[in-house]
Structures are given as C-alpha cells and as structure tokens.
Image 1: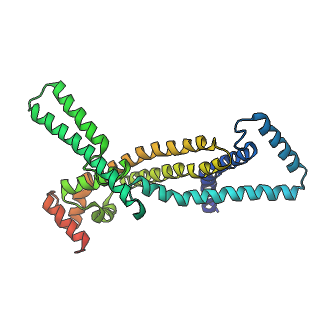
Image 2: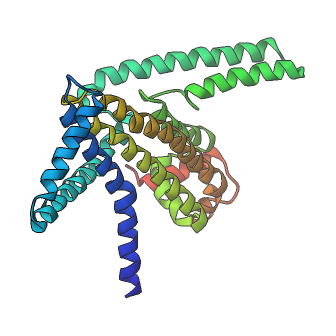
Image 3: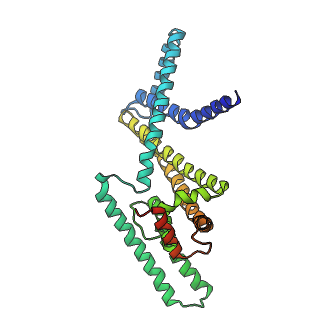
Length: 296
C-alpha cells in the first residue's frame, strides 16, 4: 500500500538521520575508547591492533553469531537513541528556564542577575533618550539604537527566568500582555484555531526545530559518559552540546517571534470570532482574556 510505503520511508529517514548515525558514532567512540583506555588515549597503533584482532575474531564466528552480534549492536544503538529523544524534554525544560524545585535557589539567583543587567541596560536607554531629545542627529539615533540592542540582547522584556531562551519565550507573553491586554497562555489555543494553515505550519516547524536542537544537545550526555573509560570523549561530547545549544538559541528566537507576530496579525480575527469587536483595544484584550480563562 502507498500509505504504508510512505510511512516506512519516513521511519527509515528518521532512523538514519536522528538515531542511527549518532548512535553508531557513539558505539564507535565507546568501542574505540575502551580499546585505548585512559593511559593511552591517542595510541593509534594500539587502536589498530585491537581493531584487527576484533575483526579477526568476528570473522571466525559462524554467520548466525555474526548476525546476532550485529543485531545486538543495532538494538543498543536504537535503545540509546530512544533514550536520548525522551531525555531531550529535560534539556528543553532547562533551556527554557523551567528548572526543577531542587534548582530553585540557583534559578532565582540567575534570574535576579539577568534582571539587574536588563535594568542597567534599560536605564542606559532612558538616559540617552532624555539627554538626546528629538529631533535627533543620525549619530544620536544610532547611539540610542545600540543601547536598545544591548538591552534586547539580554531579553526582549524584563527577565523572569534564569536562561536567555526562557526569557525569549516568556518575553513574548509579557509583550503581548502589555500591548494587547492578552494572556497568551489562555488565548493561544483559541487563536490557533483561527490562524491560517500556512501560519500554523510555520509555528509548528519552528517548534520542531527547537525540539531537534534539544535532541542534538542531549546526545552529548552518552558521549560524555564514555569519558569514564576514555577522557577525550568529553571533547567529542562538546560538539553536539555546543552545536545543539547554538541551534536552539536561533530556533527559540524565531519561535518566540512567530508567536508574537501571530498575535499581532490575527488577534483581531479571534476577537471578531468571539464578538469582542474588530478594532483592538487593551480593554477588549482584557475582556477576551477573562472570557478565555472562564473565571479561573
């Protein structure tokens, strides 16, 4: 059946791209690290000797045993891949500043530090605006813009979370609340229903890119575990960790911008759907929020 064929191809692509390749690289790192050990981390001759010996021993076994060994390796790779996909949710929560209760103290300290930095940057913007009243020279405008960019680099609104990514998403909620009187968490599920399909596709794709970046970064954990037998594995683990983190920052920034933009463009359509009027006011936003929350 065509449907089953398409499903099989999609599963195969997912297996090769997201599970098999990183998992096989992990298996190679673990086996190579075990062969080298901590005392001879870069001894190429030792590694080649061990590989040749293992290859000879493997070739001497019956075909049925060879297939069994290959199957065990593939199952182990699949198990690690599934574990990484499951654990990626923890990585994403840490990125977004949703830390567990055990880390509440460090979370508050980091959030307070970020808030202090943001307030200092905000004061700098306010001081420049007061010292350089309009009309301004181009150089004066650029100075204010640079100060505003420094503030935006910390967070788009007053920080409330311990991480940059967390404040990027929380900042969208705060800015929407201040601009429109809308509680984004309460309104978003209803707004989603009136969004055009192409907008929903863009938001879904952006969210998926965030999740994929978190999965990539989570692969660093099993690679780092190999350092127990071979310390250079920490260097290997740094590659997915840093790459995933960089991709995650870019993806989260895009996702937060799309959330805010969807409200900017389509909140009026939601208001019209629920008879709160076409023309937007913060009072109507607050009324719409109250209606969506249903008194909760």
